[in-house]
Image 1 (tube, rainbow over the protein chains, first blue to last red):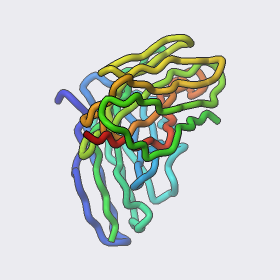
Image 2 (cartoon, rainbow over the protein chains, first blue to last red):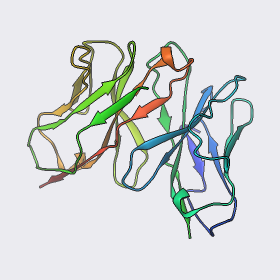
Image 3 (cartoon, rainbow over the protein chains, first blue to last red):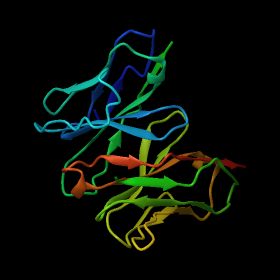
Length: 115
Length: 116
């Protein structure tokens, strides 16, 4: 597709359940990012994938959060044993990788509500 | 580490008023600077960017100049419209210090409301 695609757009889950959020980056973009945006807050970096390099997981808030990426395409963010504080919009983004100043393109996000 | 500080909102203006949203940053080296906009019900979109000192990014009547001496990237528009109502985020990426990542560091966002 033309843009970054995320699914589901909305997810309501019960506390303690696991959820999976999917991201399809722009074709040809080798870099993929996950961010979290809590209501009324800025964006928090979660994880970054670039090609076959080890992912930068420095932003993952706990070991309940994990993410995988298949080659240079689809990525899945998994949250295990969800808690109410996990309620947020989860944003995926992608970019080309070159020498600085790249534009990062965002998807419309997956809104997660934990009840 | 790198950080971005932007003026807290909300900001409420009348149509055709002048807009300034302040943004300052802390970073080593020469980061790239960005303004992203999030319109109601929509995803985050790049508004403008500047990749080196004294560069001016511009788009849709908005401008921001990369000022290394004051470590600032203030967003300005001479005459705002109702359709400019949105949340604006200042951000930086520091390719050289992030191990080759374009990871963005965001400010907390400034909500702008423009009244007719």
